[in-house]
Image 1 (spheres, rainbow, N blue to C red):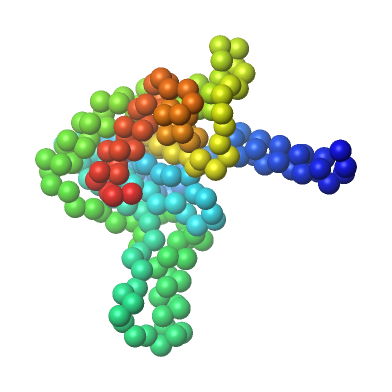
Image 2 (cartoon, rainbow, N blue to C red):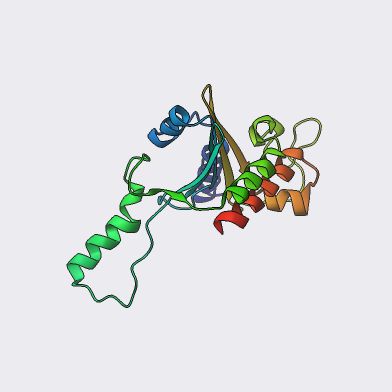
Length: 211
């Protein structure tokens, strides 16, 4: 095996370790704001593929008030509108590029979303049926598929994407992390409770926010 091949294997291993290692994540300003101003909040997010921020889809409860929000890039410009190039570039940058460098906070990218009171209540109850605060993620159950001895088994995928669930209460901000739950649950090693529940939660958020 030549030096280039060895270097490639080393870099691939380093990348995999960096990708899948659990890194302590400090809460951002928006999460802290929701912690201070709501009783409990659930944030659904797909793991980003690029440097651009992946949207937050948020369901939050304060006393008997349930509210939905998004934190995401602003809508793209209507192509029918004719703008001077310099103005168009500035607005485009503000709408869907600057979000990646802006602190995640209560800013122009954070917006409430309207659903009827009944739809919000049903949404909250249906997510609650999956007991999100009691779920185990990959850090607890093991990444991919593992046997009773903790060894990886079955097929693997390197571009399956991930799902994050942030659970926020007055006392805690907790992040659950699942890698390619659809692939592993449906095709490789079905039956893991955490993956089954996160896929159901994903369906609920998709039904409401049209992810």
